[in-house]
Length: 297
Ligand SMILES: Cc1cc2nc3c(=O)[nH]c(=O)nc-3n(C[C@H](O)[C@H](O)[C@H](O)COP(=O)(O)OP(=O)(O)OC[C@H]3O[C@@H](n4cnc5c(N)ncnc54)[C@H](O)[C@@H]3O)c2cc1C
Image 1 (spheres, rainbow, N blue to C red):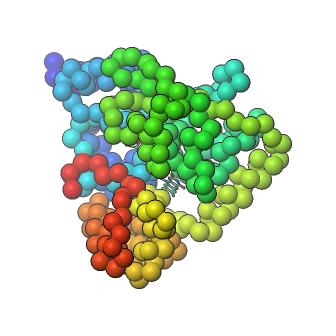
Image 2 (tube, helix red, strand yellow):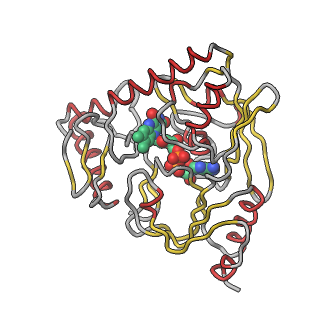
């Protein structure tokens, strides 16, 4: 039996074939992946990985798809979505969140239980897994600030990493681009008045609404170069409002590319290339992408 036939009778996941990735990314662009699986259990996730490996099929686990630019030619292989593995619960004096939980769900849990530490991340549309892998952050705080341990799955084995072994950096961790699935993270928060936490969450969300555009995007397209703001460099270069096809640099925030319904991944990619060239010419600064390219460009 080939991989496709094995998937037809695979009991541990909902499988789709030739699934448009534009349905699973915040940019809303991108071609089909060969196979798309939604797993509900760690056991199912492990079985699926093993099956793909035995058949030489490339796998990529995604969270909420909010930092991905998938090629118009799609992705050759299996995309695994873990959003159904999403419990958030107490583990002794820590909070454990499974990778598929939304960051929003984790933040709600902390507010309800009077736990402070990740208020500034409110409004980041990530999954916990994606946020850990990217070390998501905002307003000077990163998710890693509150992490105790990260649990992963690789080659059928669960492994627990202490925070100091996770190699967290600016929008990166040891798990980025690796064949290792983050299955959960354990957090330690500070106790605080619920009303104060709730107030913090709301005020950070409000700042975000004020400075960031609505519409489909991947958040910041570029990392901030040392000592500079990528958004301000793009604004100073006069690029705000520039568009290619259905992709446009936001008038509100230079580091955001907004896509319309007719945008293609190539439109976004071409806009990224133009920005990089212009910033290099104008300021001699090499911008580094924060958004991840998936598939061939
Ligand atoms: C409107 C908007 C605002 C944003 N604001 C911010 C912000 O303020 N700060 C910030 O840091 N980011 C921001 N982002 C970007 C994005 O939300 C983050 O990068 C986030 O961490 C990505 O999470 P995700 O679940 O969507 O991951 P995805 O985009 O699905 O994946 C990102 C990477 O993580 C990998 N991955 C995901 N889950 C797992 C897992 N369980 N195991 C192994 N690998 C995995 C994927 O393979 C991929 O390499 C914003 C995005 C949008 C659309």
